[in-house]
Length: 203
Image (cartoon, helix red, strand yellow):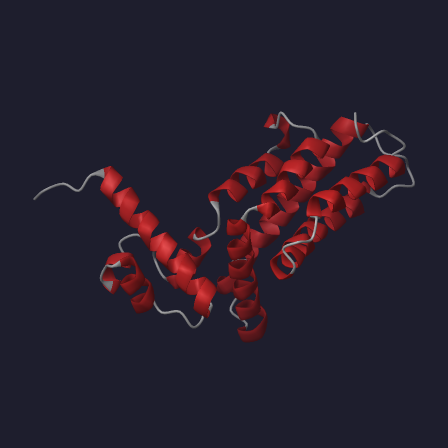
């Protein structure tokens, strides 16, 4: 039997992800079928299952890889070479890429399936909670590393949670109104945080 090269397998997997992203963005995760995705990719439906367990697994992998790299930096702040301000600027700059809009749409679709139909696996809720807790801890670490210990009357944990919520709100806003300047919004937040912590956010 002729061995299929790793390059061929990677290319086939990528073509499936491209096809799935197109189908999901056009029809939604619930409505799109594996047969339609296979037809878009030019393969048989059964071939998809050699690469992905099911449609939910496929939808999760459709999320953009560069976003994973940024998430990793927030979740592992001790190894991050950037400051809180620099990393948050990079994070929000990513929202200007067209591919992020598709990722946001896919996430919202999965969230709606979870809320509407009560299928926790649709959202991978445990993974989402785990990400939230790790990113919150990363924000706290980077803020204190850049600005020093916070004043006693400032709840930095609440600030970290608000920033995480603001990020997802900005993603939805960018999806609905692409012209919105989320870069300016994050700079305004830096200024507010800097004033709250009695430091210059440019440091």
